[in-house]
Image (cartoon, rainbow, N blue to C red):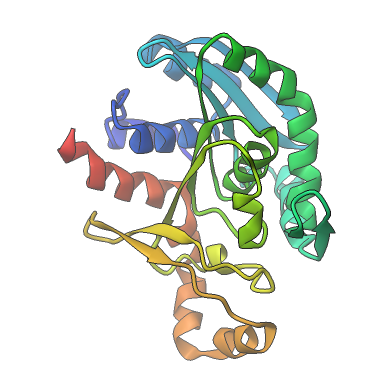
Length: 265
């Protein structure tokens, strides 16, 4: 996402948690230098730390305003061919593996990536939690999928805000933790990425963002592989494919989330 997008949407630190998480997810696509500028200088946060594991970038930051520790994962890197291919391979590794602890099937690519992030972040997250900080995980697209996986496995009370996240696991995965985890899954209208992989059975509630900036809660429907093929062959989807980068892109989520929440602050 280009830097001018920040100026276009007049991004300022928001008191609305959903909008702030959308801003943080957008910032995750920027360089470490730009991330520091926005988080430390503009948003007045602290303890910023950016890192990268297996071509997936993430950063952590503290907001003393509401005593919150944020863990933010970047989505697919589109500005580098090497990074884009590495990130896409994670999503395309969509064979489902059974997890004995969670008693459900999980997307193999997101599980492997999420497990790596979990191992790297566990002690830091636990330390912040013990210090009394509220925990928030967030991310867009691939970043949202990883955020959901890490939060569910960390087994600590937290909130998870995702934007355009694909399906990670069967529904039971999100209810298998003993902790109080709240999921806020934002999806824009016609974002087909959030329907895949269709082999994952999901009827969870999500929040749909309409083009006029309104939102409504819906239940995810599920398609079997056969119906997915038919769905892909529908003429109307050809139009959606041409618009995929627009409806799924971070810019689109940023635009609609800003439209939806900024007037309500």
